[in-house]
Image (cartoon, rainbow, N blue to C red; front, side, top):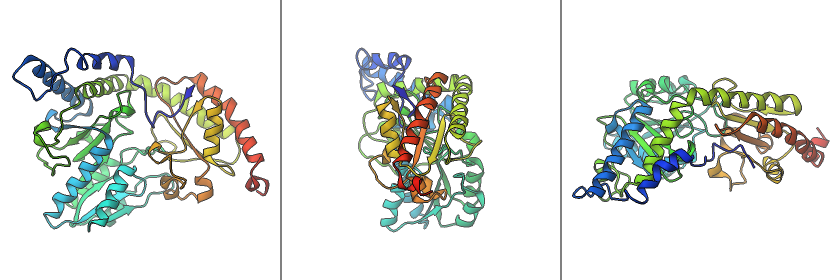
Length: 387
């Protein structure tokens, strides 16, 4: 199989698995059990993981709080900031039209509970223009949530500038960095944000572990109540093996980022140029320069993206038509509609997401397989026949 869906998930690397295994067996203790060695050993591993992640993201060790997913981290950030803001007379939330559903559906939930939500438009590249935020933010705004990099079209947003605008109005700023962490420099202090979400399975850690980085001095209401884990901020016994895995996976990704980025960008650029040269009536979606190293998103006019996926699957190539979290929906991507694509073109889109394990040979193989599939599907399309 050629796997070009790394934005959906990545496999756990052997090095990461080796770091995790002792915490399933010999060092299986509960980190809250500090009266004996097994518990202290687990606690030591937990805090070491926190220190590793803080080093990778340039934040303080006390700013790292572990969660069960990126979605939980997003929910905690947005709901917590909204609740805290309401106590100060602020009931407005600002986000963008192209956020992941973990943020969008959280905002829709809060709308039903009396909050005002503003969904900022984006330009044709998927960029949130700073002026649109300036026009929308005011002293009633509790939080602005804009993703660092889009999961579908790969566009990287001007987060530092946007965070500065939010802070001038007295609002908190959250960025969903799930697709960015481990793939581009993700510097908590340099970005100037208050809250930042990550998810381990996007960079060769297991599914089911994430973190919310919370600026020192900022205390949001808890999302999950119970025991006193995570300094009383997030109840539930910490998943030590997975947290250890996420920490080492992020360290491996950051330590090798320069080398991996060079390789991945070369494969990405080969795919982009090859598709544009070999297949007519295509459109590259997302910013051509300010995009994730491994993201390729094309619209293929006159055909359905789902048909393309199925034909590629029959040829042992795994790709996506958008976010894996929305793959069961028949609706066109909200991201592609937000950048101005009509429904019929948005339906014909394909996302290729390249990882460090992919090769140039796999890219060349795809460029052999894809054009005849597109040609075959277009031959069956009345839209293409009447173009």
